[in-house]
Amino acid sequence: MNANELTIADARDALAKGELSAVDLTMACLTAIDAGTPLNAFVHATPEIALDQARAADARRGAGAGSLNGIPLGIKDLFCTRGVASQAASNILRGFKPEYESTVTSKLFEAGAVMLGKLNMDEFAMGSSNETSCYGDAVNPWKVDDRRLTPGGSSGGSAAAVAAGLCLAATGTDTGGSIRQPAAFTGIVGIKPTYGRVSRWGIVAFASSLDQAGPMTKSVRDAAILLGAMAGHDPKDSTSADIPVPDFEAALTGDIRGKKIGIPREYRMEGMPAEIEALWARGREMLADAGAEIVDISLPHTKYALPAYYVIAPAEASSNLARYDGVRYGHRARLGQGDGIVDMYEKTRAEGFGKEVQRRVMIGTYVLSAGFYDAYYNRARKVRALIKRDFDEAFAAGVDAILTPATPSSAFGLGEMADADPVAMYLNDVFTVTVNLAGLPGISVPVGLDAKGLPLGLQLIGRPWDEAGLLNHAHVLERAAGFVEKPRKWW
Image (tube, rainbow, N blue to C red):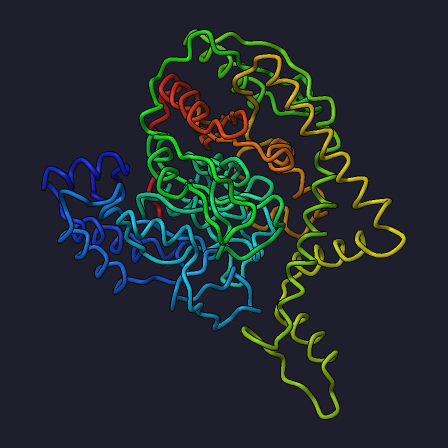
């Protein structure tokens, strides 16, 4: 096995024993990134920064070294990184190099992590297939025929890079499923923490009441290690919770005897593929065999989640994206004689924003406008409160975690849905958006392959702030499923 294919946990042990240096590990990843160009996962490689950080990690080894000392990571292009292009995969931020570091990347560097570069994503995190990026499509390393498959979105570059072994792990963000759906499509683990567990400061905003950063890793143990480094209170983020961060790795006892796992009847969607249904049934059996009690539950407002999400998220996006006006940073359109400031705004945004971002900004502006605010936005907020209440009632009745499918299908081909009805693409988020609307933690775990040989994942949803318990349930599911398949190297 090449060093770049190691898990964080295994690399940490090899580094501690002196079997491997951080520079060796980083070089193995940089070589893999060079070879992985066809995947289009890394869009701004930072080899000089990576090797400097790796040398510093080797010098620090031993007492006082952080939990990620010498571990090479990929950073989603949504995170601001000082002096390194941070474009949110949008032409409107072309040339933007922040003068500051996001809280998450600062914490990762404090823990000793090495930054290999910035990863591809959907523009402003708006998309489920990584086809809205100004860098072009990211490509799934899994291949079963002559098609290029989507790695999912919006954290598609992160998912492709981790699945292909270009980095040991990556950061992602999740507004409606953007960590969990690509994790499921690429056979890796992705966790969206409770809203407020990880600071949003220095992460380019999409929908501020839904966005949450989290780890994308090769195993549940790695997710626990990386989340421990990312999480924590940040006074710079007013929505960051001042709650202690437990030792997530220590919580992986593998014992879930007597725990109650809820199975929501509303997630049995009409037309659900038989393979997804069978996988879900297998997941229930695996958790029951581990000693958990499986109970049927009802989340009656689930059917309203997708429409409510696609009112609230675009509304917040239209507000957040108003700052991109060509005045202070990023792209500015060339103006003709006699053009005024309104012309500059209009031309800059028309050139800088892609079609999907324009679509969502227009929807959001519409639902917030006078005369429609109560009919759409306020109603969606009320529905959101009812969705949260459904989960609260399930947890109050003693449910410890909820098991659902992660996605309605395995990865589809690039170009197969992009030009179709956008609503068909939005349906990819059907199992994941409820978790964001309720602010809960959710994790996708790879459990098997479909008939074509593509990975499928199951989702576990946890109680608020109980990432430790959620990770332990996921650890049990991962162990029982024994998913070890990797994509066959074609790139």
